[in-house]
Every structure is written in structure tokens, then in C-alpha cells.
Length: 515
Image 1 (cartoon, rainbow, N blue to C red):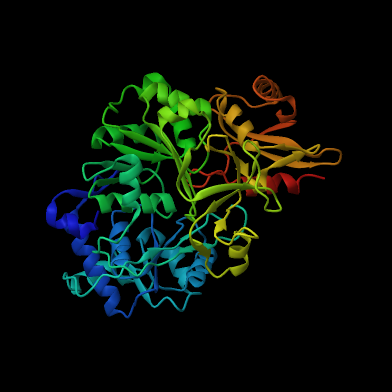
Image 2 (cartoon, rainbow, N blue to C red):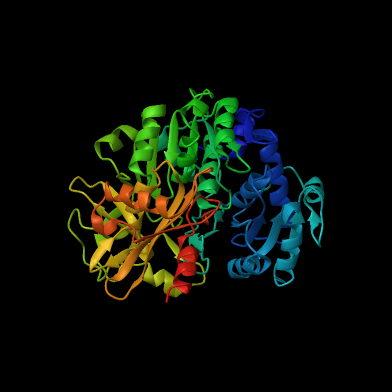
């Protein structure tokens, strides 16, 4: 374990970062020097331990220069979602208390608008050409010392939630009083080494946006191990396979929607690529449909692993491919935290019965920044060290965790609980379906009915005939009360760049049109 400086001495010319499209490469020696220079430049501009530096950029080769400059200076780094409007970004800058913003020129216009309402952000740097009131990033680094001066108090990241069901909230974990060079410093890399057997020989592919917690933190863990990080600017299924072949990728983390897109390329297209370097395909962010997982394992072998965690970091489960085949549908047993399944009153439920998932930790692991009430609601009413983020699931008799859905999207029809994820899992395997969302809409008699919204594959004609075919497809796989009463079609479903389905706004559109 270590940090970039450890490996800039051991293997200075080894690739630390490789960009997919441009193939631009940064060695460990370059990453170390640039992050040290940036840390010194920020210190010279008055930033002190605990203060917040925000970064607003597409997936870029400079991203981890900013990350490691913050982490080695005791600063808090806050990634700004690259899709935010100026008003939304201004809210995050103010809410986080950011005093510095480092941006890509791709966001010069919106960043300048956001900063007009953010007077506290006094330090403004932009790489690849300064504009709109920003100082040149390159000039700031050039005039700063390349020497590390004094201790390196470990910083932290504060990532904002996706905001699919409300205002985004910063998730701030406890900052530990430890030096970055100390053996006591434990980052994500320790977890990657423990459960994925990653090492300094690993080549890790990140196809996710770096403003997302998994994209940022697991990638940083690769640097802690001394491996090579390959970053995709944007996910594309064929390019994804080509990058694995070109860079001899050993480990990759994806969301299930990415696996679906890869599988729908067809076996002939997939088998044009040499993927023999792969040791682990890790899926997370949403339960992977069982049929998707089986097809991936049939294709690649027992290397398709899965974990369940949350940005809040209150608990983590893991299950390897071979173990999953014996417990299909499970997201595994806990690696950190002790899971408890509780009803709406906080009472623990027996094995097999779904309820709200709490994770028990020795101490509360996070808080929602600036929102004490939301933090309080995430805690169990009687056990303050048990935390929940709204996921629903159950434990089997062997202690394996199964997810059913988000608490906000559970459908109650005629007094029966229906979990949309189960219906989505069935529908997405139909050859005509490219993407699908299922949610409940009001029904005067039953309380709610099941509504499905489908994005069809290219060349498929949507319509009533297909809707009835899809209903019959579900009827052949699930109980009758789970069959969608209505199937609607959209050209494209709203997915976040992280791969998560933005189901809340979609449901709101249908609710607005419902009498």
C-alpha cells in the first residue's frame, strides 16, 4: 500500500493513468510531481487543511492530479457532476463550502455562470487554457515548487448523491488524523487487494464518470496499489471491448446496464476481441439481472463478481461468480458492516422477509453535509450506529443478502408488495427491449398498478402488438399480479452517466398525466 509517491520512486516510468480515446499517458513520476506542485500552489493561495476544492471536468487525464493534490494536503475534494446546470453547480459549491474550483475548458461557460453566484470560491484554475476569470492551471503548477514540504495530512472526498429522488446531498465521511505516508493510511486499495486480489501488476479499466464515488474512489485505489488506471471518456460497448484488448486490462467495474449493452452486441461481434487478460469483471450500482449474470459467466467464465455498497459507505457485501452460481440473485455476504433487515417501525425481520436494509458499524460512518435531519432519518430509531439509505432486501438463512428495490419505488397493489426491479430484470432480457423502467401509478381500487416504460432495440417497431407480447413474456416468468397493466414506449429512457436509471423524474412525468 502507498500513494503515487511510493511508486514514482519504485517504478517512475510506469503508466499511472491512460486515457482511452487519446491514449495520453501519465507516468507515476509525472503524477507525483504534478500533484505536489498543485498542492503547493493551493497552499500558497491560502488553502488549509479541511477546506474544500471542487473539480468540474469530463473524464480527463488531469483529474487525479487534482485528487492527489487534495488528498496529500488534508483538503476535501468535491467532484462536480459534469451535467449540472450553473444553478445546480452553484448550489453544490455553496453547500460544500468550496473555496477553490479547478475546471476543464469544456465547462468554461457554465462554470463562469456558476461562479457569479459563488463569491466564496476565490481560487479558480483552468487547465488547457484559462478563460472566463480563471487562472492558468499550467502557470500555477510551473511557478510552484516540485518538492514535498512537511507532513502530508490525509484528505478526503465528499461526493454528492445523484439526486434522483430530491436535492443532491454531500456525503462526508469522518476525516482520520493520519499522514498519507503512514502505514496506518487505509484507502480503497486495501479493499481491492483483499477482495479482488489486485496488485501493482493490475490494469484497471474505469468506464464510469469520475464524479461518481465508485469511479473516483476505486480508481484512486489502483494508484494506492501501484497499478495502471485506464479511463474511458464515455462508455460504448464495442470500444469497451477494444480497450480491454488494447491495454490488456485485468480488472474492470461496470453497472448492469453496461453488461446488457455488451451482450446485445451479439456473440459474433463480441468474440472478435481478445479478452483473455481479464481476471475480474466487477458489477455494482444495481442488482445484476440473473440471466445477464449467467450469460456473462457462460461467455467469460467464473470471473464476473458483484458487490453491493453505497456512496455513504456504511456497508459492503461481495460475492464471487462461483459462489453466486450457488446463490443466484444474491449480492453476497458482508465485507464491512453487519446487515439488519427491519420493518417500517425498526423491528428486525426474520430470514426471507424483505425490509429496509440497515448496516451496523462501530460508529456512524457518514453524515449528509449540512442536513442534520436527513442524517437523523438515515439512522435506526434505537441503534444510532445502524444506517440505511433506502434500499430494500432480505437475508436468507445462510446470511446472504438479496436486494429487491429502492424503498421509494416499491409498488403496493391490493395490499401486496411488488418490487419493480424483479419485473425490469425479466423484461430486459426480451430481444426487443433495449432498456426498461417499471414503477407504480395510482389506482382507485388497488392503490397502485404496474406501469412499464420500454426503450426498444434499433429496428423494432413499438406498439400495442409488442406491448401485449411483452406482457405475455412477463406472465410466463412471474406471478400474474406482477404483469404490467400498461406498457408505454419512449425513444430513450433517462439514465444517469453512472448507469443508474433516473426513474423518479420519469415516474413524475407519468404521474402528472394521470387523472
